[in-house]
Length: 244
Picture (tube, rainbow, N blue to C red):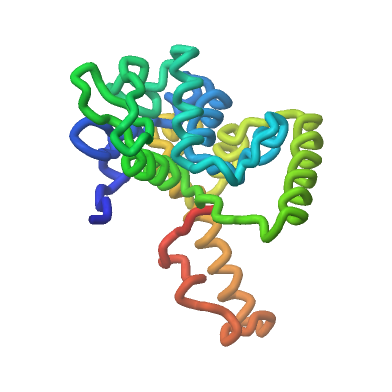
């Protein structure tokens, strides 16, 4: 059954009776550390394809690693560092869990009573929830053959080297400045700190969509845009926002 909880009404996106994903405010992310927060949620939603270069550096074929195995690797690395993950998992203390092998040989995380807290299915729902909060799309790409795979690895390695040389900027700083100076955004620098990151991201998706629609209609009125060649249902500013 699809999860129909409204992220406009809660700061705890419930996965099951044991686990919920916390939806922090913009201000809470700043307090926790913006860079550290995004590192954590990006790693918890990554698929092996996203980390092909890192796996190649370790001499591992990323296509031999499953999404669930990668998730457990990331979680275990956080647990070894005793990292505080309450900004993602709320009241659930991830560091109190332990690994156990299930009957089919697959690892899972259990609590002190031996009850399953995270398995493959729950991991899928956790990652999906985090992506939903941030309007992210799951990577769904594959290399066609060995040569294509090596090309992708080399290309991504080059991109990462170039990115490492660039000065890091704050996603939240840049986004907030742009939004506050947009007439459609009804919040100022102080009040947007109390918005949940989902609500802020939703506005970040919706406002450009509305502006694009207005520009399209203006272009159609003056004859520079042919509406018959566009998907109006998808383009309309009242259509659902999709992940970026």
